[in-house]
Length: 417
Image 1 (spheres, rainbow, N blue to C red):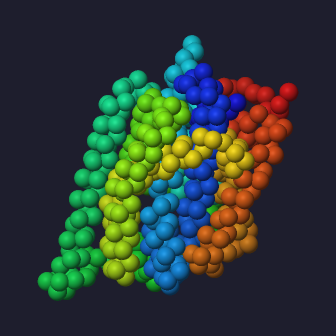
Image 2 (image 1 turned 90 degrees about the horizontal axis):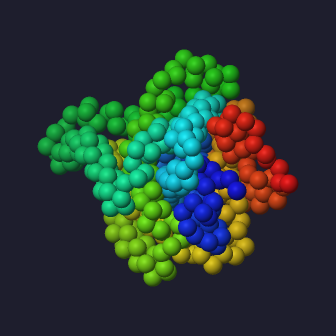
Image 3 (image 1 turned 90 degrees about the vertical axis):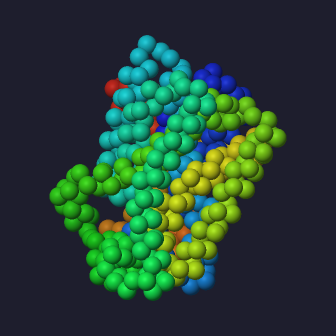
């Protein structure tokens, strides 16, 4: 039984019954559906809209409510889930031993990076697989640490990232507060934030023009700069690495292995969500109250929310393990989508390209936030419909098969016997 990215469902590798394995698969399926809701904005609108609805997509009451709902409950929380499961999967595979476990792991990371690089080059500027592949290089060195050590290491990474990014963000915020108080009138220091995360007309026009480029023009542009796109996405490495470490910890401690009892899962989820949710709601209110000012909104979305995103991502994982423990038709459907998570992640980009790119229906820059989220239901419906049908005939998804075959330098069986 194969699973993406890097998750083994062999029950001998870490404990858990078939029912518990089903819950872990379903959690991965839930994560990949949430990723679709996050990525649809990146495919359908200028990049600044991913952070700030004032940049593009509308700030009417419905659009504002949708932005707030996704910011509080979905944005980065499902990326945390993905990274948690990735870390747990590395721990499982390394724990299975074998003659050369590290060699196999690094082969998988190399192939995953190539897949992610091609994904980013051809379709998705915000591909996350490259981050996982790079972060995965470090995991064998820490996979044997105790649970408590892994948790504190993750906390240290997040604190370090928050200290660095928070220093920059606070510099902007402090100047913004002075402007609001009338202490200074020079707005020049705030212009870069408005250009990158606001609604600067020239920057939005340039983003719209680039978003409507032909496929050949995209290839030419990507070939002209092979370094900076990868460097930019690596800014997300610290938070992803911290989540991977927590995934290893949660597997070793039994939460992701399905070994926690219902009371412990419920208590863990409620405590974390009780801390994170009020803070995230207050942050959303602050962004809205500022009129989605670029400095305020960007610092909230990209900096200050980070630790609470991880808390809520962990809470969602615990709630899901609690809800999925009894199985059922919906859980089995999500589990099938989870077993094809890599395939479904890449398929989502293909669907979004077909909808929004100039070589598809050309809807980039033509839809608002409400319509974009409605269109995100299309790849979600496809993965929930096709994944169970595919697994009736095949052992794993096509991209999972390619990943594992390329890593092993051999053609593995795909069809069921």
